Image (spheres, rainbow, N blue to C red):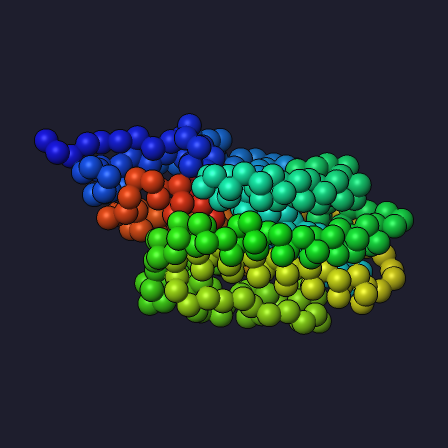
Length: 365
C-alpha cells in the first residue's frame, strides 16, 4: 500500500508538449515510468499517402513544431533523390543557412524550456527573446514565423531578400556578445550545476545500445554527427567541430547544446562568405500531374535533436506510396526516458525529459 500511481502531465510545467507519464512512486522515488504520447494530432505519415508530392509540406512541418525546417529538408531531399533532381549550388548554401538558423532557434527554445522549468527566469526570457529575432528573420525570408514551407523539391522558394545576409551576421555577433551573460546566469551557474549534474546519467555503451542520437549520444563522448559522417548540402565545404562531453548526464547534454550553437554560427558565417551567385530553384513538373518513377529511398539529416531519417516509397503515382520518419524523440521519449526515470526523484522528471530534448509531435505522428 506504500506505492502510489501518479499522473505527470500533460498539463504540467515540467512536461514537454502534449505528453503524459504514469509514474509508480514510493515516497519521492520513482519505481516505474510509463510514457503516453497520445495527446496530440497524429496520422501524418498516413495522410501523406493521400496528398500529392508538394501538398505534403504543410504536414511534415508539423511533425516538429520547434524545428520544422529540418522536416522540410529531409522530405525535399527524399523527393529529389526519387526524381533524380539536382538543385542549384546557391540553393544548397541557402538551405544550409536556413537549417542552421532553425537549429539555433530550436536550441534557444530548449534553453528557455530548461531554464524556465528550473526557475532561472532571467536567462529563459533572454533565450526566448533571441529566438524571436530568428523568427523575425524567417518572417522576412519566407513570410511565416513558425511554419515556412520554404525548402521545396528543386531548391528553395525564393532568393534571399536584399540585406538579409547583413541582418543575419548582425544577429550572430549580438548573440555571441551575450554568451558570457548566458554562461554566468545559467550554463555555468553553480545552482544549475548542482541541479543537473549526475541527473539522468547514460553510459556510452548504453547510449549506443539504446540507439540514442544527437546531444544525448554526444554527451556520452561519442563524436557522431550526420553532417560529418554523411555530408549533405554544403557541410563538406565548411569547417565546424562536433561538441562532446563525457559524463552523459543532464548537465553534459545542455553544455553540448550550448557549444553547438557556437558551431552553427560558424557554419552560417562561412556559408554567407562562400555563397555563389546564381539561381535558387530547378523547375519541377506540374505538382498535380507529377508522377515520380517507381522506387524507394532513405534520406537522413542531422536535426537539432539528432539523426532524422525518412523512408519514402513511390509506386509511380502522383503521391507517396509510403512515408515513414525516423525521429530522435521516438527513442528518447519512449525507450530511454522511462529507463532514466526509474529510481529518480519526482522533482527530476521534467529535468530529465527536457535534457533528452523530447518533442511530442515527433512521437505521436
